[in-house]
Each structure stands twice: as C-alpha cells, then as structure tokens.
Length: 259
Image 1 (tube, one colour):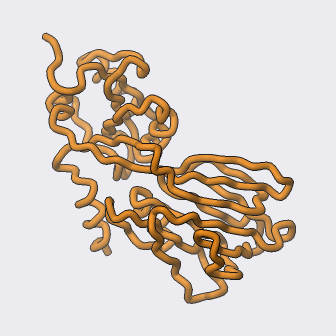
Image 2 (cartoon, rainbow, N blue to C red; image 1 turned 30 degrees about the vertical axis):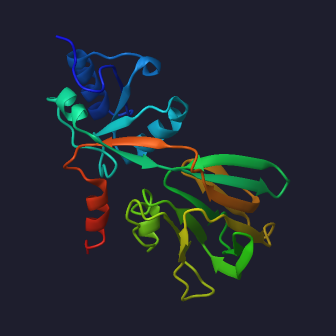
C-alpha cells in the first residue's frame, strides 16, 4: 500500500544504544528505510544529545528531523511508539531553529569556527578561575569577569546547560539569547543578561597564559583561546518536527514552574 501524507520517504538513524538500535530495526522493517540522501524526513531515535548530533551531521541536507525518544530526558524528542508513524508525520508541527556561530582565536593565532544549537560556553582549563572581558556589539559591557566560565544560549538550549548554571529559560520565538555566568566570583552578584538575538557577543581572555580557557560549541572544543565571538546564524535553518501534543513552547513554559 503506498504511503500517504507529506513525507513518503523515511530514513531512520539511531543512537549507539541497544534500545535505539532495536527500535530502528523494528521501524525499518515495518515502514521501510532508505538512504538519508534520498529521504524526505529523517527519523532520529535516541535522546536529546543524539538529536543534536543528527542536526549537526545532516545540516547541509536541510531535511526536517522527527525525533522519537529512546534516551533519558528527550526534551527535543517526541514519545516513542511503533504504531502510527505515517499518521503522526502527517500532522506534525515544524519548529525552526537558528544556530549560533562560534569564532574562536587561540593564543597561537589559529582561528576555528563551529556551530552551536544549544550554547557556546567558555570554561576554565585549570584550577585557577578565568578572567574575561565582555563586549556586546563592540561595546565593552564588563571589563573583568572572574569566573569558572560563561555561556551564550539559544532558546532551544536554555533548558540545558544554561538552566543548570541558573540562567533564564527563554520561550521559543522571543528572539533572545541568554548570557549566563558559571560560578561568578567577581562581580559576585552578577547573574547575566538577556540579549537580542542579533547581538554579537565577544569575549577577550585576560591573562590567558596563566589562566587558560577553552571554548565549546555544543560538542566542538577549542582549547587555549584568546578571543571568542558569538553570533546567531539567521541564514541557517534547522527544521524540527513535533507531534501537536508535544508543543515545545508549552514544555519550555512549563519548565519555568518546576521546582
């Protein structure tokens, strides 16, 4: 029987776990499985970490990705069911995400670029706290922050590392970024800032030889950085598909009332 609905060619990808691999085998046997390059939709089986990996890996294909949770938290995933995949895909809602671009210059002058869907974070590499200067759109906003680190988070990533660092949860569609310190020592009471999504955030590492700092864009790490610039890539669109009852915006709102 031919498939109906907007998505008729599937490609299943799975995390490296027994649960995810078993789910992929069952779904592929039931619905058919093609090459990712020939698919209309990618079905990702795993947890939130695997969803981020999948978004990065297949970004050049500009394909929508429908996740089913075979991991732990599954904030970016739909519930897993063997049944009714075609019907579910016929009624999905699409959420568009824009990643951050990290441009990191090392102490030796090398320049590295990477994309981040959740956040770009700067972290101290040794026992000594990092010392950072913060600029927003080229204007110095803090001449010295002494801390374990700092991060710039997208709305999609605001419930991840950002929330663990006591940063604000940002509802989808608000066009904001969270700038959140990690264990700030001086100024001790500074809790970060909310910035417009078009802002360019720059960090200059002070005393980087004695107090080395690494920069991380999702899973890409650059060590020994001297300067890091972070900006949104509005020209890159990541397409996530959700069941109507999942309602990512509602889940983000609900997280703000969880104790």
